[in-house]
Length: 336
Image 1: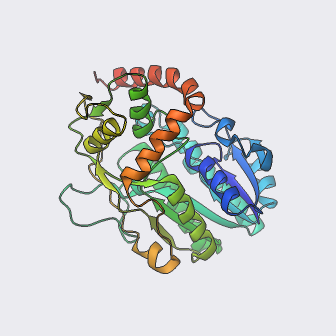
Image 2: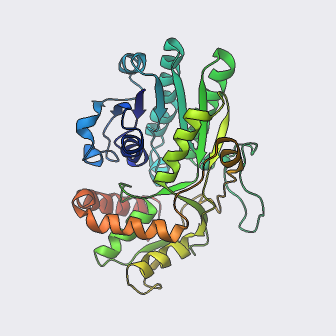
Image 3: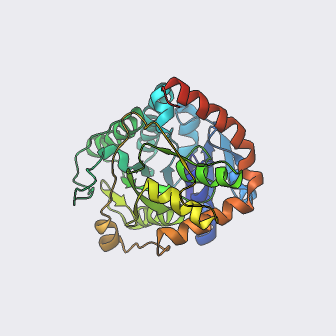
């Protein structure tokens, strides 16, 4: 199989490439990535000589058409995904998440290629902390940030192209990922690398916000389950029953790293900070036979901490720029 992976030098995409070559070594992988600050070919160390790497923009219609023409399947990870950045400058989110998806859809339509669209549970908005319900494939969209709104828009484009043009496409909406090769601007690796550097972690507000965590390898196994066995035109939610509050995450990171679980600082909460995400992945489990490899969030987090401790050369160059960008963001958004 010839697979075109967009965003394959980013967090989830690069892990998808590693996982694919580990579990499906005969797959011919082409990676398309713009190499923004959040992507790096170092995330493909160890497999770069086994893939075709193309630096480019998913909104570049000519380039995308040429690459799609050669593929059997397109797996679309490429996205701008940081909520704070979307509040400061929504423009890149519209270009990559909406225009980029449109560009890919037109190419796969022209060449009759199978397409899988990787999305997020954030398109559904949030749930109350005490709400017994979880997101399902029938939950209405209710995005609350420029990031989630542009991802919702891209999902709806896929649905429209399926109905209007008969596209062979599927969508997966996944809960929060963690694991190796995640940029240090993100919540979990930021806390881990801060502790390694002797810096107290920072927590938005009271830390009561709940996320449904899944290890990136479990997510990527689910993506292949949908590509292989999913029904064209359908959406599948991906989650591992990993609901954990942000306060608990920070304390667990500190505990697993041998520090005082209360050794963190609180900062002013983020604007429009969603309260709770929770995924019901029953359809994925029952219809496609997927189940997560990691038995618990604690086990997956411990393995992730070990990876960051062993791979400082990968994340250290990101850290200084990320800290400077974080400080500017806090200033612009009026936080201390």
